[in-house]
Image 1 (cartoon, rainbow, N blue to C red):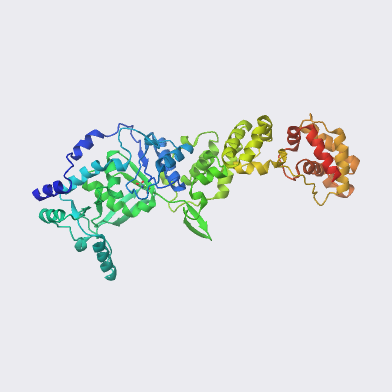
Image 2 (tube, rainbow, N blue to C red):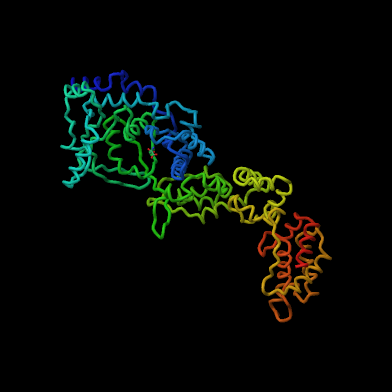
Length: 549
Ligand code: GLU
């Protein structure tokens, strides 16, 4: 025991606090029964990824549903991989998707809450204090093996077909004495501090994963590294200390960590901490040539969330879509509660996919259309112009030239009781409404096969005489029906269907002629509204152009 204390002071001479100090300054949280404390712990190694957004959403909604706390913690112990502005990219990115932390980093340079600092690189002394305690208890020791030595051990293990790693008889410094350690340190040798694992591979660790259910794995017997030679902890150790001191109740993280759970449970127990609940979130998957694979930062543009911003997806739509992936009962709830915020949904981790949900771009478009169709024309104008300002300046200039005109374009089939579900994302708008803007309109008078050019032209001549820009929808169609019989077309579709030989077509066919003359297309939103917005002069001009052919 005496040796252990000497060893602790030898290895970490500057640490003069004990764990009690931190236990006192980070007391148990006072929260209502059932409130969950969860977190997302990103590394600031680049822009926000879909995976981090998804894990954050799952954590946010878990906290919200239980009246708990969701905090962010920056895991920046790997300084080599860190990118400048990385924290802001991630936290700012989450905020753009409406995901706000209650605590932790709330922007690139602001932290909030009583359990900080929420950045691992600023917690070195805390980790070292707990390592020192493990050293005192004889549960940790210094290891002086060089990278070459470790490599040699690994090769030897591989050639003997033995599980690789620093365990059992392969753990060279496991029984190092104080005197030996002191001598090596005096020689200037570098060391890491390892856990002296009391685990046995023959034993099983069983835990109940909050998402995946019961999981059984061999106990950890590896003397894994707690502190690296620069005094910075490994992920495993920092995770145990931070989630204990920050009083995380549920560790909900990517399932690449599942194989490390035996190490984590062991650490929590050896440190005398309550083991949190673990829930391992399956990654979002993609279909690649018929095979399911994890969405990849390298191969899939949608892995980086700025892809969605560039395409002009509303962040609400992306979140709504991710909710359908997160919870198998979300869509039923949404049908029953079309107007509620997703934050009111009672989220249950047991409703998450165990194997990994497929990213379905078609579904995302559909979810988006449902959201966009509920916006007013003014809202659409604001969103589209904000998007265009960043990604399509030319379109931005066209839209903002006459804002009232642009808004009236977006009001077509929108500010009505049953709005049309057409637009999913803002980069579709220019093409969708091209014929409403002179900069983009290209006349095209190509008729369907069943209509003769001469009939179409004759119709347009007649129609021009009766057309009035003040006609409402009913009057507008009445006029087409009025002209139809003069040209040998049936006023009513049903008359035409009953006796097609007696007619050249129906009033419906004639409205198609008019639609093509006005817009150059066969399919558009309500043509009467389009003509009202374009105005009389423009409509007459387009009709005359079509007549001239
Ligand atoms: N920094 C880890 C990661 O990004 C966090 C894992 C965790 O949530 O504990 O994978």
